[in-house]
Length: 163
Image (cartoon, rainbow, N blue to C red; front, top):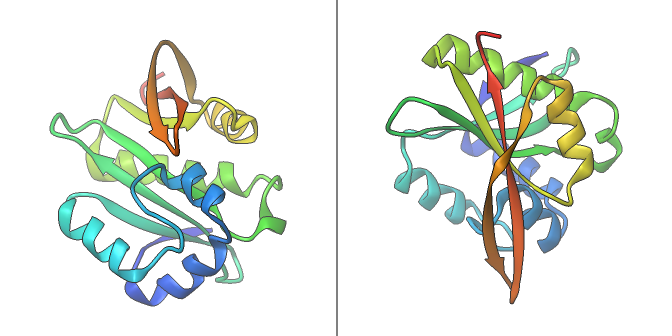
């Protein structure tokens, strides 16, 4: 398995994975709207040039996941917009392998002490996946995302690199 930086050639595949507005919100929050368009991705990348999208590929060179490494001003990375693409690939451990690849990329590029991610509190499969990769819930802090007249609670998870 390997990571590759996302390019515009990957967009059609990404779009094919995003089958409805609920799934898009689940993995991307309020950053994008359904249907996902190349211009939304382009504008996001223009606004946040320090953020890097990645695609994950299996041993047969088939793409299976999309995600992002977000670097803030104190060089503490956060994983974001994590999606195992095809529905029939979910629940097979590929998400954990993808997260592990992103952790390794963070270590190589940024040498951080901590890596963060946010996950909606009702996304139990993702929480379990991230815990298996070594992330722990921050029980003190949450983030509220208002969306379509509903407040959605995102939990903060952290990975301690040196433990």
